[in-house]
Image 1 (cartoon, one colour):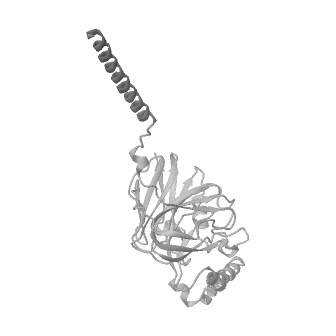
Image 2: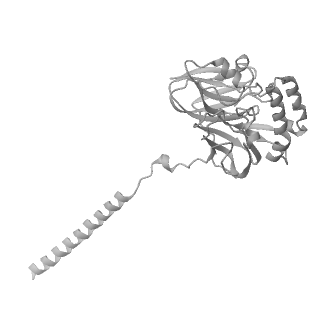
Image 3: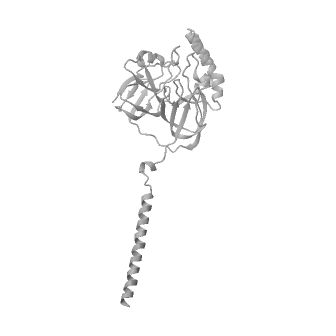
Length: 321
């Protein structure tokens, strides 16, 4: 009898042990199948607005959120481009630009190309009165063919327009070829926060371009603070364009090319001895924009799209280590 009781007790103990063993084994298997998400992957994904140019176009969403947005611009065309964000007066849009603005610039450029710049600039008196109310709120810098640039801007809700006015080889502006697009910025916030910069740039009409930090190879984010803004003789304000230079880059030719009001300025083909890598387009005084670029070691330039930028301290060179 005692022997039977011992056997029953032993069977119970063994059974419990098996159950516990299998339970532990099951827990271990579940733990092995559980993916631990790294902290950085749990972070909220940033809102990115993709813009693609394949010809004379801006392929992108018609409506985007307000606040901070990263504009990823893919230039898949054989031409150099940029995008500039325009804020037209209430009730005006790209149709008004095509009807009342583009023809004036086209005729003026035609006269300038024919060697009559004085008469050409007189054409600008025909611009509608409301054109003086147009505000430029940033955009990308110049971007060479098959390059991708990232520009980070803060936009309030409202109606805007994108344009590119680089010129074709015949002197016709890209905007006159249809490179304009209406854009709605909604009340919905992007949820993005202001980025942190690796290098800080200030730009003004008096001090020119000042790069405050050393720049090292890799993907870098630049901040651009517009301490002031002014309208130059080319009817545009100062901006920042990042350009990769070569040992034999003709710097004087580059400077001359940056002035669209010159017959051979801002025209295709762009200088072959430089590569444009984006930047931040015109913005009002006090505004700040950001841009990112992947940099190799070498010599680079920051240049504004204005007449004679060196004379205005709006062309500097720097080395990437």
